[in-house]
Image (cartoon, rainbow, N blue to C red; front, side, top):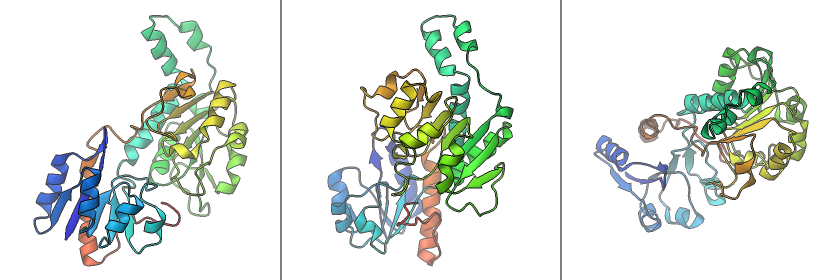
Amino acid sequence: MRIVVAVHDPPVWSIPERDVRRLAEALPGDVVVDARTPEDRLREFADADVILTTRLTPAEFRQASRVRWIQSSAVGVGGLLIDEVVESAVDVTNARGLHADRIAEHAVALVLALRRRLHVAAARQHARRWAQLELMEARVPSLAESTMLVVGLGSIGGRVAALGASLGMRVIGVRRQPQLPLPPGVSQVVGPDKLRDVLGLADVVVLAAPRTVEARALLGRDELAAMRPSAVLINVARGRLINESALVVALGAGRLAGAGLDAFEHEPLPSDHPLWSLPNVLITPHTAAFGGDYWAPVIDLFLENLARFRRGEPLVNTVDKNRGY
């Protein structure tokens, strides 16, 4: 079997050569190719049976006439689900759940930092200013008196909900199938059609939903207006879930207390973007999943799925290509 590894989007979304070697050593009977340039990709995809990547162009997919399965090294598969792939018989799997703990912990860290204004304290520290009076003016309810709304209750959202509940917060969830049993720590679940109704109940809103065709503008002007002015918004999912222009207006006008953002419509976030200069925004550069060895579990999952693929068994984390997750 010919396996093409094509994950090379510097500086961080690039699989180390050592992990490609590990994969090759684990599969001595197969051919494992590391394709790192656009020319490599076009050439090697022509003979690929399996591809490990995060994105494909129509031209690349046309070259990959033999491919039967594509494994994404990431959770999001927007870069793979071009029309040609969706309409094909090629299976697509993702890395759902591999980094859920780290992403959930990052989300909670953003919640606590914003509510306790640690970003302001850090800025004043840099300026050598004793900001005791400024910081003590912040009025936020204790965690035990707060409500967290988690939009998306998959592996990441479920973990965020459990952590929020363990800190004493009341947790409401939003998911496509609200009739399913309540996840641990969640007191109430509603469907996406009730999102605007519950936004106004939350002191904290965490976006952990996948980016789908239907959900690319999940929070726009009206949804942001439905939130409490004292609430904070956290996005550890996909940048396109939020209308950034509407968010900038809401934050600038004081209609939201703050936002902790790890994903953006365009990355890297342009240096002239107004989000950089808003004092109530805490930005992390799409790093929520990092903190340990990002790639080792990706390789482990790929090897497990490859064994299943050979045996004709269902693959782990198969993506519904029409839904986008």
